[in-house]
Amino acid sequence: MKINYDVLILGAGASGLMCAAQSYEKTFLKIALIEGNSRPALKLKASGGGKCNLTNVEVDASHFLGNESLVSNALSAFSKEALLNYFHSGGLRPVIRKERYYFCPKSSDEVISILVGRSSGCEMLFGHKILSVEGSSPFVVTTDKGKFSASNIVVATGGASYKELGASDIGLQIAQSYGHKIIPFAPALVGLTLQPKEFWMKELSGISFPVRIRVGQKILDEDLLFAHKGISGPVVLSASLYWHKGEIKLDFCPDLELEELFKEKKLLSTALPLPKRFIKAFLEAIALEDKPCNRLSLEERAKVSKIQNYTMAPSGTFGLTKAEVCRGGVAHEEIDPLTMESRTVKGLYFIGETVDVTGELGGYNFQWAFSSAVVCMRGIINNYLK
Image 1 (cartoon, rainbow, N blue to C red):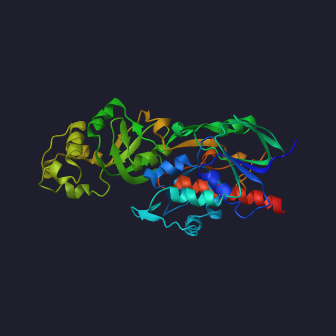
Image 2: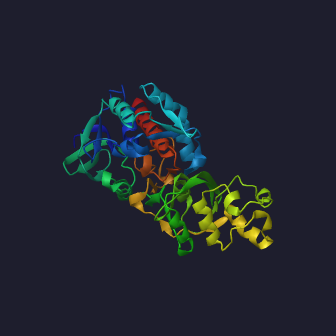
């Protein structure tokens, strides 16, 4: 069978486009990118309120759920600094928000434009729904518009959230068809629903303030947002990455000195530096009268201390339709961390969200998408140069 391409990249999201862009000026490779949508990077375009949170001020493996060596290798190969320099050379000047998040100054179209421009040597096959991948050397990709063959396949089809943008688990289906171990996709970076015991929080919809959450050994600080369905906001979204079931601990007032509070003559509702609606609901939830802080009994002080150690067990998540990303993917032991190539099927690569690596909220998932893509295309190019 005639081989149509050296490389077929499946998916034109963040990882697929960066992978294609790495072939810039490598004209000896015949590459095509297959995408089910009529345009590239729809999820990237919509992210961050349309301004795409590219990466974070602090990037290391501790901010990811996944195999540490796999993540660390990708971040070493294409670091935060390398990512910023890459886009800077294309004319993009990211701005920092909240002293930690790198965003596009105008819109996510700035990122997409650079990546598409540097993928100009690749053939773009849009509007091709990927149905299956079969064989090896050559691989045969079947779409709803025909079949294509290639010596190498890069699976960059993303996760299963954002179904309205064409997302699916086709990447995991491909991996399973080749006998790879996979971890099924599950919603991550998503709000958490409440048990009846915490339904008092539903009355606080719209209130937001900084809190600290502990999930297992993981401690996270950021804003919590009370919502109609439960709790959300940046800190909850990141916490959801590490929560499977069981309890979490909330510190609603991380900077509060309780011993100093208990010396105050003011009422609790006045002395506590939190929104009044929250304090009122919290006091009702712990069955405590609003009274001067210095007149609290030992038992009442113990109740107040729950404001820094409130234990609750979420009932679940807001689900895939509300999730920013998915956790799960192709198991790390199936992938060579130096190239992102399958350890058992030569020429088959997995990158981005199709791999069992998921970052916290704050640009980490785009960093992973870009870094894993760079590692992958470098591996492919090096194989051709041997």
